[in-house]
Image (tube, rainbow, N blue to C red):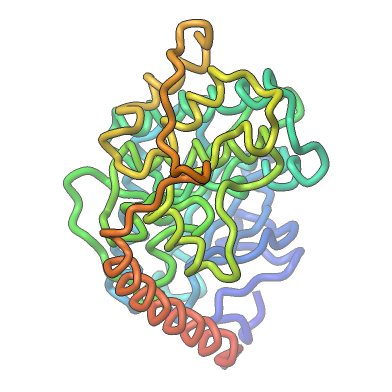
Length: 339
């Protein structure tokens, strides 16, 4: 690695990390780190290197998040979860900068897959969802809530195996709450955030249930349930308005499947599936699912909880400030460049 890169931890194809990992290509940036596809010179296998931004290395909250992600990776060993291989320190940073090594998943993201194939056939959508539910049930049993489920964080291999990736903002049971310099990174992705996340709660297993419900809705219809002129408008809707029914987008979908998605997308966590195991059971036994009486207004539109409007206005205002801070931090990181 050239001296110009010391401090920035930015690598080019052909360079090596700690004389062991040969960089093959950049996989892009996440909320707080760069990711690279690399070859392990010892084993010959492919891996992913996840290296935090150098501008955040000295931030105690960032380091705490890194430690938490390592602990989570060490806990989770499941066929539908990307495996943590090891953790390490960059030698050319004086042993200051940490990095993670993960298994390389040879597949495409669900986002890419949906661009080509959405809406998916019912059987395929259920097959994908069941695999994710299995992975998340395992996570929840081991005290981990993902909190950032979205099609970008699901990889589909050639044989149809689904892998859950990126536990960068996951919640670990019993761990203290972290406040990040990049505050916007902690809350999740607006289209898939549960109402309680919008309201500032940390969330639990039912938060992941909601996000998986959104993805199942998207797989079946080719679109997400809520739309608005901005992310803030979308977040406001999910707190104040019931999710639309599947039949609004496609009346030919099974009513039992519509009931499953409806229950997963309830605004109140207590009204949702209590666990991924319960959601998985109903998806695998649609003939046993009872069809509820859906609450609507006389106009047939989803019911609005007016008592939450003031709360949402405050939350949306606060979130707007956090997003601005996050954008400014990103601009500062980009402008910093090589020393």
